Image (cartoon, rainbow, N blue to C red; front, top):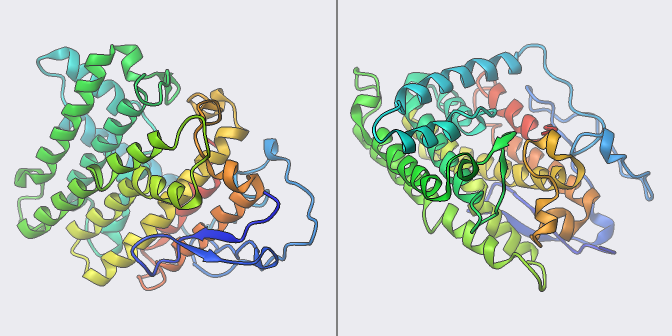
Length: 371
């Protein structure tokens, strides 16, 4: 694009991301924050004609990633939380009759991955003073909903993708009817597990009103006001013809991608006993990183191979999908991602800084991931 007069960003004030009018001369990349302390890193100015980044060797955002704070072992934290989530998923969805559908559910649910959404749920609960045992039923539930969305997205009638997390998609490993039913079953299982009082510690530390509120949040995220709305809008915007506008693309990804990250964070905060003000700040944080995840995903789709991604690369371009690089160009998509990263971290400023490290590092992990 020769010029960009409207810049999409998540400002953490209103109920959704907003568009801000800017002149091309005012378009500057934001200052990034250091991962654990939430303080500005050294400011950098954009020169009039900067050299282009060599994308093949660079991070999705910039060549220089933020320094990792030695005080917090993020890798160890993620490994420990992901392992706990894996155990909970394995125990919650055992192999049962009819075996075929349960095999398909477990095939997709236990296929690995970084478990970003359930870890977000656990981390949000911790930030407001809760414990993992309080949030694990919610973490398991959001991962079931996420897995359902992946199974259904890969179907021939949707994105028609044969690869997921480096191996055949559910409908390829089994068949289309079983894949559809496995996704449906995971949705029901998610709500049954989240709503069941026996899923929580016996000391009643998670009260009934919190459970009911969490169930409502997940239902809102997964239906026609959330994931389904985003998927439908994505289908309408895909194919020949004029690409979706920035407003339409924002709607798609606030619902299709950000909604489940928002639910993960908000539900974790709810079961952890957060105040309404804390929930709202964490909601805004989640919306920013949800959009950030999609912007980076779009960047990786055009800069990485299928082997690196564990799924089919270049699929969005081939299918005529509107993406951020398609609308903004690659460099400005990276600048947009940097702005979202900063805005997400700004929302955590009011929390105990000793407890925000996981969420700050998770934002960086989403921004600077390579696959």
